[in-house]
Image 1 (cartoon, one colour):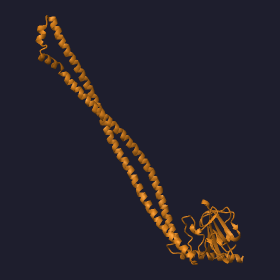
Image 2 (cartoon, helix red, strand yellow):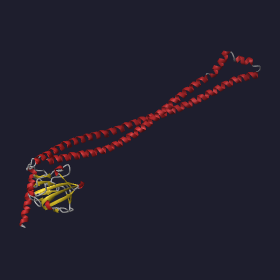
Image 3 (cartoon, one colour):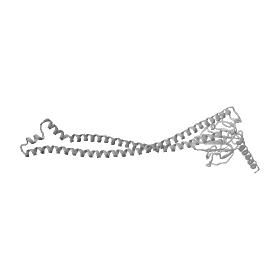
Image 4 (cartoon, one colour):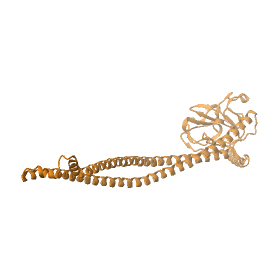
Length: 378
């Protein structure tokens, strides 16, 4: 009972130490801060892309309306052009009809004058050449018939002329109605085009914001890459003072399981004290006993969790996307198989179980079961 009480006090002391280190061990402008800023910028960019997609849908609707109006305007203009051609043709027919009427009006007089001038026949000739009254009347009747025939032709031409004038008036009225409709359609067309251009301007403004967000994300990514490169240089130099701020979430969606110096990294290494593999499948983070170990990513606890040979007491988590993580050499495991854990949830306390030369957290990331360098995902 006494041993358990001491152990609990040690855990509390370690938790306090970790909390203090989280406040003082890292600079204000830490990798986590940069990642938080990057995440915020990427969220803003994604929101802007969603907004742009919505506006593009609205633009498509506005363009469809404008296309329909443009089509109607084309049809209306075609009707106006056709009606104008009909008016031109009718005016030509009326002009020709008027010419025929003028010709007909002077027809009889012209013929009689010609007959008089040519000396072929005259009114006195008709009287003198008539042998009797009956023949005189017959000759005068012939002249009257010619005159009446001309008059009937003239009346028919004038009737046709009046009908053509009436049709022309109807055509002109129809064209005026079409012109009025065209004027109204032109207003509607201008309004639809203005609405479409307004939406396009909004899309252009959103795109400008997206460009700014993407430029800022690129700048922040460059900062993070430089920080990772600096970390790699320190690791290559064998620095034992490299502490990792595990509070931030990387672009890949992982966070550090704990905070401490990296004592061994991924890949080939000399076997420490003849214990452990020379082909190291993860990274080792040096921490005091009972340091809280946090879930690097949300997922389910694998059935392999528990005693795991050289890993000692290990926690295996299964994540979406074919990812899984391993946390080895723990002193105590706080989760059980099948349990769902949230990212950042405490899943174990660090220890030195299994093949270990001292308390630390052995951390692995696997992709479809294949071990990969965690530093590429943190």
